[in-house]
Length: 463
Image (cartoon, rainbow, N blue to C red; front, side, top):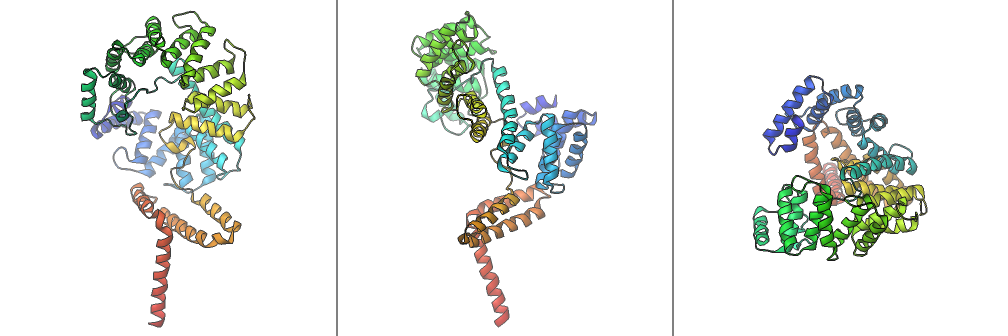
């Protein structure tokens, strides 16, 4: 009940109601509710923030085998938040968390072994950790979608609808809605797509999506026909799954040379949806769509040659098509490229390249709420690693001594303030803002501080 309220909540009051349910369930010993409450206490999502209470709850959960609690304790130990700064203990927590099934712990361990943070640098161990997470995400992607392709890729978007902002101003939306009702086919297709996946501040609404697609299809839009076919192939509240209807609309789009329609027909023949399985027909349609630059069709061709589905296995051709699809960001193409580099299948084996591809795949899928857990960036600066790198720089070149000296002064100041302020997240956040403001001018700030101290000392001595 609490999770349902939290997912649908739009106000702080509604979210607070959800946590009341979590608290009641936690009192009755429900582990998932206890995990929610521990997170709330740590981040201050429910009532007053209480890191000590959060740690006590995490430790209790960890004894019960909660991998989420193990991961959280690893995170807190790693940065000395509310508990002793202990990288060895953090490593143990992350190891237990990964063994229990925490994908976040797997990613953190992968990052540590890749970068040599408090462990011996080992690309192979990092690759193994990243593989487990990539396999998990890829498996979910294929199972949830039934077929190994992304559900929707936006096409034919007017320039004003392709802004990086995810918020479509309501007045602008009304303007586009007016144009769509007046018969602007391109706007109709774009609004249909936005409603289909719930983008730019619009709620996901299959009925509105189908409404706009049907209007555009009636006006002759091949893209709209293809997306109607896609809706019926996947099935939803407005367009119940119907292979015959999907075939009809894909055929209409394909007859106009539309890449999405051609790809859709290829999928129907490849998986035998509404028609007998026919790899030769599937190959033909995938090739036509791939020639038009459709990345999902390029991936599908790569998959056919990689798996030997209806064709002789040809890893060189598989690599070619996976690479083409990956250039457009097709996630599963990136996943299979990583597999090929990891195993040396059809390409010279490269652990580093395999890791890079897996990271790109995971970043593309935005796999976790905490972005750093994807092994791409850390939430806080690793001061100890920074010290080590600065020392190496000073040893490499004598010219680096002075800039390294100033950099280390900044680092030690940050470290001191972190120790003082880390007991409270709010205070630390204020310091981070100050650090971002002064960041580019720290050397000037330190020089000015030294000069002021020297003037003060000289005045006292000779004054």
